[in-house]
Amino acid sequence: MSELKIAIQKSGRLNENSRRLLEECGIKFSNGSGVLKTKAVNFPVEILFLRDDDIPQYVEQQVADIGILGENMVFEKSKDVSVIEKLGFAQCRLSLAIPKEENYPGPEYFNGKKVATSYPKLLSEYFEKNGIKAEIEEISGSVEIAPGIGLADAVCDIVSSGSTLMTNGLREVTSILKSQAVIIGNKKLSGDKKKILEKLLFRIRAVKSAGENKYILLNAPESAIPEICRILPGMKSPTILPLAEKGWFSLHSVVREDEFWERINQLKSAGAEGILVIPIEKMIL
Ligand code: ATP
Ligand code: MG
Image 1: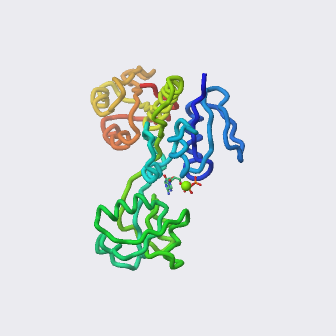
Image 2 (image 1 turned 45 degrees about the vertical axis):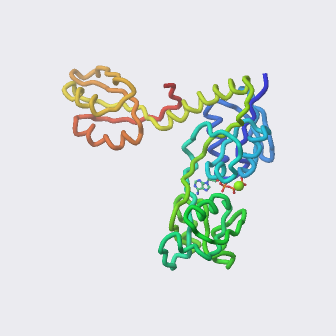
Image 3 (image 1 turned 60 degrees about the horizontal axis):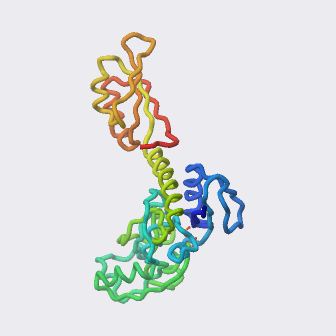
C-alpha cells in the first residue's frame, strides 16, 4: 500500500505545532534536524519538511499529497488544491501598518505610497477592491523594518499581538485577512491515499475536540444537582456518583473550556464545591 506524503514546515512558527499534531495522532517519526523527509514507523505516512511558501505548489503537483500551513499562504499562492480541515493554531491576521505618528484617514492613505510585503497577490487584490493606486514592494522577510530603512512607506504583514510592529514604530491600521493553520490536499488522491487521509482526519478531529474540551468533576449536595445539571452543558447527561458522606454526590461531565469559564460562578452559587478540571487526551464523538 502506498504512503500518504504530508508536507510540514521545516522550521518556523508552524513547525512545532504541526509535529505535535501528528505526534498526538499517535504517529511516530524521527525528529532529526537537517532531514528533508522521514517515514513514520507506525502509520503509512511520509513526512516532508519544506518552506511554507513551497507547500501549495508541491501539493498541487503531488510531490506531497497533503500539507499543513497557514491560510494566508494558501490564499497568496492560490494553487489548485483543496482546503480539507481548519486546525485552530497559528491564528493571525494579515494587516496594513503605517508609521505610528502618521494620521490614517482610511484606505485612501495608501494612494501613491510604497508598501512592503511578502503577500503581493493578497495586497494587490485589496488595493484593487478599494480603488487604491499604490506601489507594492515585494520582500521575503523582515518586512517590518522596511519603513525604518527607507525601503517603503508602510507594510502589509502577518500580525498576532502587534508587538513586532510596535517595536518598529508601526501602527496597525486595517486587517485584510484572518488566518489559521489548515490542511490542504491534492485534488486527485488515489483511493488508497484517501483511506489513509480519512484515518488521519479521524485522529486529528479527536485530538482537536479533546483540546477544546475539559473533563470536569465537582461535588454537590443532592438538592443542588438539578440546577447544576441545567448549568453544565455536557456531552450528554452528567455521571452522578454518591460520595461516602450521605446526601453528597460527585458529578462528572465534559464541557467546552470557554463555556466552563463562563459558567464557573453559576456553578459555585448553585452549590458546587471541589471543582476539578482535567485535560482530555483524545475525544471520539
Ligand atoms: P519559511 O522559512 O517556512 O518560509 P516563514 O519565515 O515564511 O517560514 P513563519 O514566520 O515561520 O514563516 O510563519 C509561518 C506561518 O505561521 C505564517 O504564514 C502564518 O500563517 C503563521 N504566523 C506567522 N506569524 C505568526 C504570528 N505572529 N502568530 C501566529 N501565527 C503566525
Ligand atoms: Mg515562508
